[in-house]
Image (cartoon, rainbow, N blue to C red; front, side):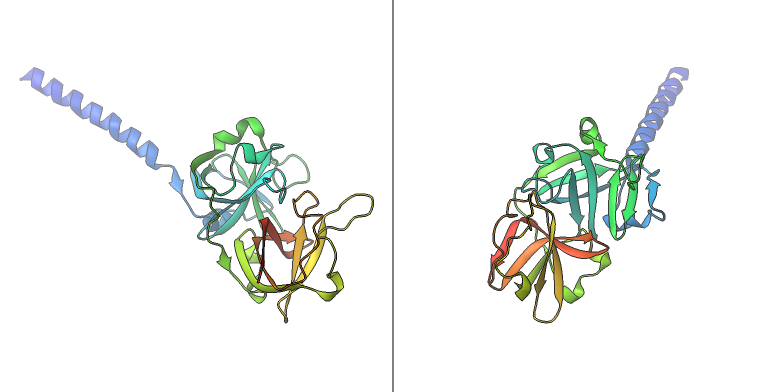
Amino acid sequence: MREIVLHISLLLLLLGVGCDKASDVTKQQCVSIAYLKSLCDDSSVRIKQDLYIEGCVVANDRYGDIDKAIVINDASGGIEVSIDCPKVEEIIKLYSDVRVNCSGLYIGREGARFVIGHEPTDRYVVDRIPEGEILNYVNMLRITGTPPKPTTMTVSEIEPSSVMRYVHVESLRVIDEEQGQMWCDTTTTLRNTLRHFTDGRDTLPVVVSRECDHATEVIPSEWCTLIGIIDWYDRRCALRIIAQQILIQ
């Protein structure tokens, strides 16, 4: 009889240990990007909860559109992850689905742009995640190679809450003053440039990186559709075209 009781006690002990392990797993919580942003009530805040986000990489450096960063989108919006790596595309592919483990990282706010990274040590709201630590935080779930469906927006609908969202803006034409120009201005070298498109009523600033693949191309004069992310540039919203998605109508 005593032997049976000992076996039962041992079984209960093992089950108890098993339950503890299961509860440890469930402590990590998947949250939306919008929820993660809500934690940032200062210029920079440490993420103390054991949280992660999942989403699609809608921008990286494959086409030179952004540098040392990725932008992730889920149904609630978008956020930037700052990475200290000269070739981000070699590690985190454009249009891949990823999980970002946020515990211990910092979330910062630059105007309307939210950024995840390491503890800030200088004037930036976060520091970049070192190349050797990227895979400690960013896990590849699936590589699709196919762009997700962007949110269709009009120029008048774009606002600060749209920043880092992957969007599709139709019926745009470069303003008359910028017809026939290249995407980027040049003096002795190319420089980052702000161009302006209109839908006939409102004007949309379009920020162009001097490193992007279409920097030296002439801006189309026809009506077109532009696909990219809403960025925060010079204290205002501006579209940043991703992967040369300039569709002539």
